[in-house]
Length: 179
Image 1 (tube, helix red, strand yellow):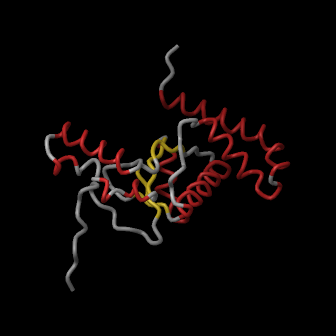
Image 2 (cartoon, helix red, strand yellow; image 1 turned 30 degrees about the vertical axis):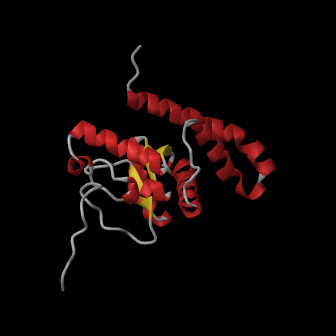
């Protein structure tokens, strides 16, 4: 039997919600006032075992985990992190790979930024999955300071204190408006 990615994601979402419900009594013992939040984080940690929130700024991490809990319990959406903080060396490596693949630094900047400019290096950016989780953040992330900043990257969100102008791609310069 072949199961599509969408069907697989739905099955994993159901299993993750079931797991969170099963973990709720244990979470209540650990943190009575935050049991739902804690059970959600545990269940998402098991669903997305490779994600790493280390290196994110405290405000970015807090905003993300709060948004994930609301998405999970209220709207039944899972939000997993595929990439968060990256150190300078890893970001330089990603940029160099993209330059080699696309043939120029200018072309590479449409997909990835140099380390000096990357919000991932600053610890304020996360790349999320699945698409439904990203859609939820697109619709509700502003309440947590999480904004999609590039039109060509449905998965990329950054923590900001105010809504930034959404750019076409990472290397696009913001237009200066002269009054």
